[in-house]
Length: 119
Image (cartoon, rainbow, N blue to C red):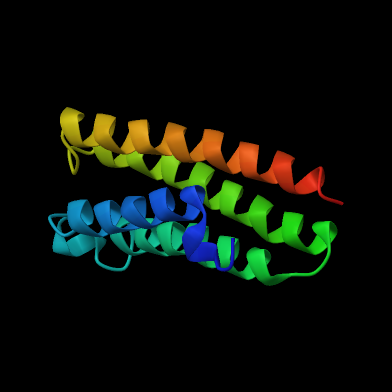
């Protein structure tokens, strides 16, 4: 793989980020600098840290950024639960996000494991 854009976990995370942006568009204006902004920043953090880690030379450096991506994914898990309970997300929207979260979590874990075996 030549670039981070070739990696399935990044592609799925990018789709996830677009979904988060789309679904948070309907959040109340009172959340503009709160939950809406936090969810978007966490989603962008997933793809950005993965991309940065992809270019690092050592597994230790790579792993550091991949772990930040994992942390940002967990952050969104908490934020989507809160958004659903505050009725900012419907049950269907919440399930859609949760399904992608789980897919990305598995892919990211597998990616990290595969990278470790290369070093």
